[in-house]
Image (cartoon, rainbow, N blue to C red; front, side):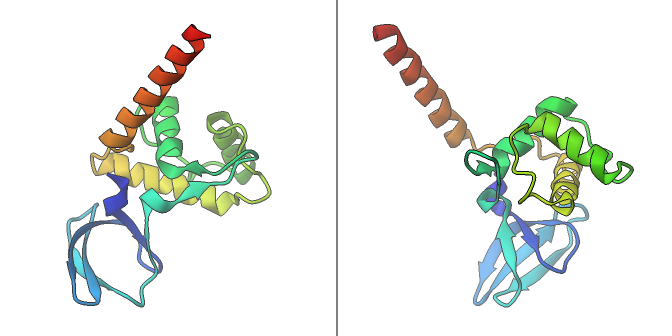
Length: 149
């Protein structure tokens, strides 16, 4: 699902990929439904391609958004009113091993802003079903291997 949700540098909000034209993408603002072109010169990033630095390995944004959803019960996060210190502490409660040197407070604010926009637009499933099924199958295989040992 998040592969089709885009962030465009210099443009507020998140966009859903609607179609592709020659040398451009047709995107739709998830908040108001307005469509517009995004050209090759625009810095367009799919949310599905973003990861958060941790001390061990990078964690895909889909997993981080899922953890935020679990922590908030699917409610929005009032990050604007939090101080930088409180915001970092709150994020640490959600993702305890995030790399505090490489993840900036502005990144955390943007992450919570994106989460709130997705929730407001009715996007509540962050992982693709195929990925979730693959992960479930991997866990089942690991459990079977653990039982046979």
